[in-house]
Amino acid sequence: MVTQNPLISARRQLVKDLIPSVDHPALLEEVRLCLEVLEKPQPDAKELLDALQFAQRFIFIHLAGLSGDNDAIKYLMDTTDVRWKEAQDVPVADSLQDRLAQQFIGSPAPCDNPKIMLRVTPVAPRVVESIVKNYLKNNVPFDVDFPDDEWLTRLMERASEEGLSAVSAYQEERYKAPHIDKVNVVVSLPDSNTVERRKPSQSAALNKWKKVYGGRASNEDAFYTLTIIPTPHDAEVDEMDYEKYVREFFQTCNQPWLHIEKDHVPLIQKLDKAKTLRITNSDGTDITFDIEGQTFANSVVAKNIPGSEVFSAPRINGVNGKIVAKGKFQYDGPIMENITLRFVDGVVVEAHAEVGNEHLQEILNRDEGVRRVGEIALGTNPSLKRHVVNGLLVEKIGGSFHIALGRCYNFDTYNGVPVNVKNGNDSQVHWDITTMLAGKEGRVWADDELIQRDGVFTDPKLKVLNEGWAAVPLAERPEALDELFGALLGRMFGS
Image 1 (cartoon, rainbow, N blue to C red):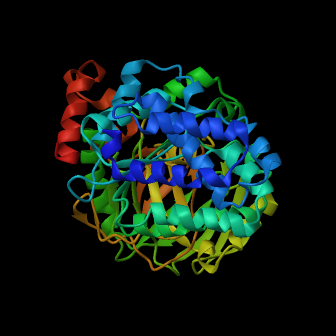
Image 2 (cartoon, rainbow, N blue to C red):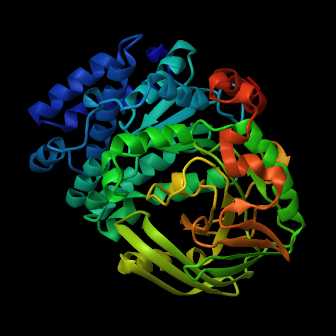
């Protein structure tokens, strides 16, 4: 019951407490409607999400110091961001959406009866509403955070940096222990045209809280499971038909995970024994990582959906050479294209983007750690085979590798298995940059052994990583996907 959820009850009470600070009639009417929903014992999932979305906006207005600015309130209420009650489902079969929701419902948590934060945008409402219905039915304590990109951009345009810092402090408190144990993230990338309007100082003031939560996630003090669902804007940027793109995304989320997890084992054994990892491609990439003493994590869908990858971190001073990453990239701002990075002794000494270079340089100057590599990974998802802007999706592609500039992970186990993925690098940034190897004469060497050629692993034991479902026995192919999916949840999440 919502009325018994302590996290939502606290939000409801705060909204009530802030009513006297506002005299804007339209805003007050929205407050009244919001409270009607939040005081229902069993509201509909869609109306609950809409009420919580409005409640967050109302609280942010107050914290930003805009309660008495009716012009600013009108500007914020005129946002083009979709309210939850208006959101349209993606053009994908309900069964695929429901499977994705079940992956979040069954995803791992650090304790029994965890307190969960849902961080969501209304890109695939059926998925999120299915999760909320389950939480309501099972009395799971949860809160919901909405990264309303256009609305927040408008808030930045009207609020002072002091006001934005107050909003950030509220967000930081929401994500702290003991308030939250686990975060489930079902979002879309922000529209690049919207993000371009933000000044770096405004973004820095509003987003200070993210470093605090990022540190919790990196240390596994807080668990998370994340997906980033494509939008029509993403399809436009990537020059793809949207319905085709989103179908491919959901298909990429439904791969033979048990078999992929199994095939990762011999690949990881090769990498863990190696002292160096060298990667080249025909675009000009020639980069060597010192990985002596590091070990790689077997990542399927416990934290990122879709999977999959094997990842670690290089030794902090052990990156030398050049990465030429072709394609479009987005991180906390406008689109960048065709990025070249040159490393000497672990540090980026030269960097250039053919488009968005000014933003690239701004990112690299945020702190000292962002010029070092906090992660090195090989993508192993056999489904999608082309570069896209969606950073979570592209980094999983079989026949690609990615680095993360900035913060390394600091956990000692991954899904219960001991790992060494730390290298001591700290930063407010963790930015994954993917470079394609498939179709680009890519080569990957672990010491002197060629382990991948043109995006294809050379070891016949890794056939599933190359071919996906085609390498799986007929009885376990998509016709038996429901059974296989259930087995995966039981194996990985103990359910």
